[in-house]
Image 1 (spheres, rainbow, N blue to C red):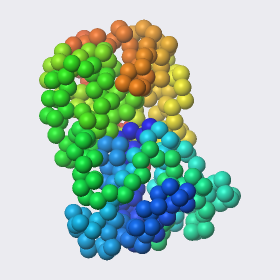
Image 2: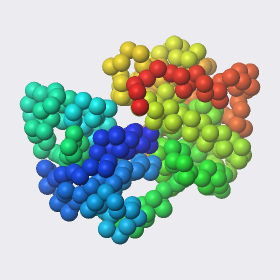
Image 3: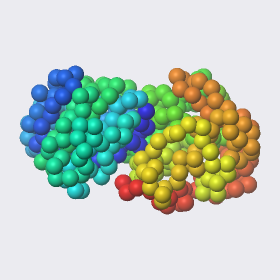
Image 4: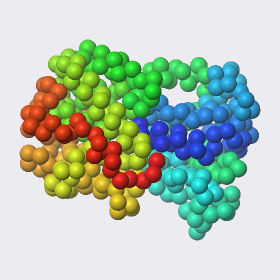
Length: 347
């Protein structure tokens, strides 16, 4: 399932290629008949909140976003959803975001989606929604949710979500208070979108390792300063992910320590030899049965909150923000200069 930084990259892609333009909308699959209601409207804006994408449509470009006439397409990709893009040079900064990595038209005809013939690309039969503008198009397939809402419907969804670390209006105190006031385990709460919006299974596992926290420690057992530290770490990691399209949580000096992974976790830019490989990107995620990069203890896994959580039973025992090895190495992992300077695909 795409994590929050991916949805923010989607919103940026729409903002770059389609926002402000009058577009054609259709549902080749036929399961989103509401596409006819917004056909030939102007795409006013694209907004990401956690794992939710909202596309705002209005009859003309001079309509305010909060006007009653504005309609919002709400998309949640879930496990199998994706957007694919095609258009003129410079339109699509990325060809796909989400689960499948198939270019628009790839199965229908042998045609590069970046050529001037993008207007003739046929949608796949599974395309739930196609949005086409003067310079390019975007196809949505396999989402968990694709609905048409008014402003009140959009706000109702946002009101159910916790703070999004990538949004300027995020309130970290809301996250901290909910965690330290709960008897639930920290590993469970990090996957609860009402506690914090945008975290998926990779960020959960890696945040807990970097904080040296056992996933099953209840929130009430944690100090406020430690939870504040988790938030700070999350903000830094997700901003890096939004900029590069990749999740990288390891410090450079740890990447060549047992660079293996048990499952093939695909990320954007995997084909680029200049990016940090998957096998070097994570401390514990998908490294169950392998030795911990730092202490050599076998990494464990267990189902928690509907997903598999990964952790090192030796490293992840801290009850305070700074574990012993962090005190001995004050530059890691809380110093982010090297993390943000990592090479990666352009945002």
